[in-house]
Image 1 (cartoon, helix red, strand yellow):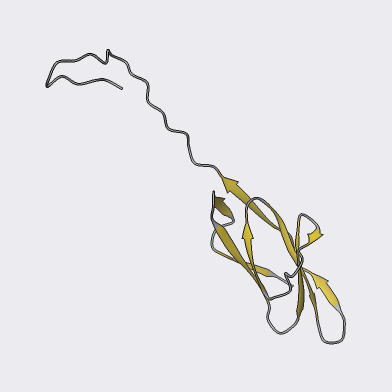
Image 2 (image 1 turned 90 degrees about the horizontal axis):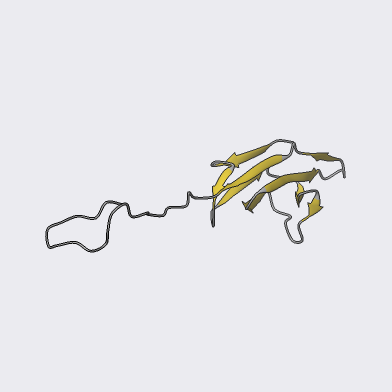
Length: 97
């Protein structure tokens, strides 16, 4: 069974990505090798970094595992300003940051 990633597997803080398995079967989603309680639908909303997979079972009880999907949390850059000149200025002057 294959899993489609609906979007990018690289997530910004607070984002998520939907994972989609073939429909018409029974499912159990896993995060880092552990079953996710209640995650038994064909889609799963993955949040944060980790390894996601799904076990798909047909009506006869035969199961197959999906390949693992790796998601990565991409942290935003840290912005800061350093002043390169004095904060004491006359009207109309500028401060170099």
